[in-house]
Image (cartoon, rainbow, N blue to C red; front, side, top):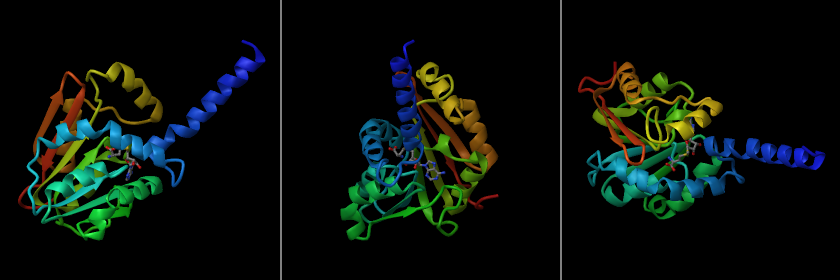
Amino acid sequence: MTLIAALKLLLVLGIAAYLVPQVRKPGKWIGRPFAWLMNLSHSRLTDWGLQHVRIEQDLTMLDVGCGGGRTIQKLARVAVAGKVYGIDYAAGSVAVSRAKNAEGIRAGRVEIVQAPVSQLPFPENKFDLVTAVETQYYWPDLVNDMREILRILKPGGILIVIAETYKNGKHNNLLGPAMKLMGSPNLSVEEQQELFAKAGYDDIRVFEENSRGWICALGRKGPLGHR
Ligand SMILES: C[S@@+](CC[C@H](N)C(=O)[O-])C[C@H]1O[C@@H](n2cnc3c(N)ncnc32)[C@H](O)[C@@H]1O
């Protein structure tokens, strides 16, 4: 390899090392295009996943790791008599989500807060439904973060986790190693079920879209609240 080729390779690796973390945590300015791209690339996956829950007009809902805010917008279009909240720990995601949902925010039907999943700024028993699209594998402490969501769900409320890859799914050969490199857990259907159970959820169900390699896992907070 010539010196020029080696320098080019180093440059490409350097740019990649800088940009890849923007997917995990979009920065205030450089991360914004990533949040916009997520809105485009996750829309069909989100629509498929949301078919597994009933979204009623008067629900109070939270989208965790809201990215570019498209899921919030989808939920708010249905919940015309309810309220949709979004949280994300990244400044870039919060900025893009707020811009995307400016109308809902002005109308008082949407609220977006910068916060980590591990410390949700909401009281117990507030939400009917919590959604998490393409974000769970970035969370720092899966069991405790899932328990934190259980805390803020109403008894009978549902958490739905939607993702475009999982262990043994169609894209696992391609995306599995990338997730390993990023230090992200890559759960199978059974491991996802175990995680929900360990965190204290009831009525756990997992759906696969085999042709696309998508997964959607749901759990309900029991009538007696979280354990
Ligand atoms: C790949 S994006 C997905 C965004 C959006 N849910 C979607 O489907 O387009 C992952 C998002 O999760 C957020 N995120 C990752 N870890 C988080 C954490 N610990 N707490 C809150 N948000 C987190 C990131 O900032 C990013 O906006």
